[in-house]
Image 1 (cartoon, rainbow, N blue to C red):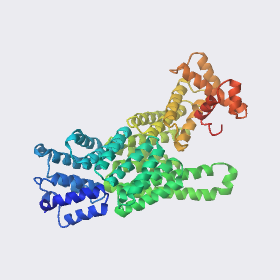
Image 2: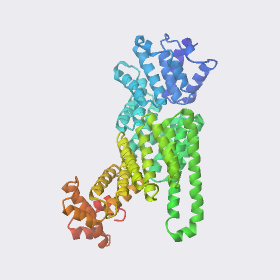
Image 3: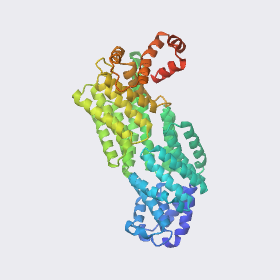
Length: 541
């Protein structure tokens, strides 16, 4: 029975978890659970080690052993009405186990309350490994909410306590999470350094899930840089690693979804080449069209497989991500009805869990669908413009509940593009007020994407810049300014707007020579380059 073996089992599980000896830990649990019908009947709440055992069983379930139902059943031995009388250490372990269940159910805010309670009394906890786990789980909750600063703080603390417990492999697993957070904050070099250090440690273990996370992180980083083939290669290795532990692990589904996303971007590149010019089309369109359809087919197949796995785990964020990615594929192919259906399904999934990231992505997709209807003059233009603006505004509001800079930038860009599309945009009929609003959104997005690679989001930003700066009617803008119609822009902002109008024109007249522009306008070459870079002309300069 458990009462006779918990101390020995618990010590082994703690060590195996800290050293990431996953196979050994799972073998211990399998040996114990063989022949036991369910946990509650064998977990004695009066046994001094039972609560700690439940906590560590929860950690092992997260590592890939069996199902979360085992932890839920185990919590039945510690009903909430009877917890007031348990020891403080037992109470902490119960909170940890319950928090893990809530994370699995995507009830992130409730889970975070548990982990915060644990950390509020960490001075009373003598086990650094347990404190490390509490920080790690807190970081996961904040990351799911898009709260990257708080997540980074907790991950760093988790690493520190894991090292204090002399469990370097466990600390390495936390470095993997920290590296992704650094990457989200634009610190790619630091992220890659941490990822490499963690990989060196964990490659000596059988922690296939975390090893898969490392490869998946590499894939997403290379995807961001536009190195799609390399990203696909790392995603394939990640899938191999996850499959060694569980062919239906939820992280495997996430990687499949990422793979489908990259394949969609690759398909878009092929379509751009097909549309490049008539002569090129005649020579290569059949081959490019075949490759385009092949990539789309692979993307849809990977998304379908991801959806199956997410359905098993009842994972809303994952299922919603699949809907969004699938919706973009339909939008790319002109199937607006199916794209809109996927956007609404994703929003519903996000709304059920108050998932701001997923809801913002869904509204962004909906906004793009409505803008396409406007361009193709489908349905009532006034009503479609209303829907597009509503979706764009809500996407911005939702994204601001997170610290996801790229999501915020993308929402701002599409809000600006929607304003242009619904108000005449680059036509002379566009009102200065509308252009000012779109221009402000453009500037905010550009600040968020500063130092980012020139990917598909950056390309959308250049389209918006051309609409609000390079495009438009300069005479109309100058006339509006001369009449005092400046919106809420400061004199400094108006000066920058004027520079954005004049410098590119002079640059063209002077043979695209920065030095000539600087001499002609009596300004520094640095100022010229800064303006050209802001307008997306830096590469040409």
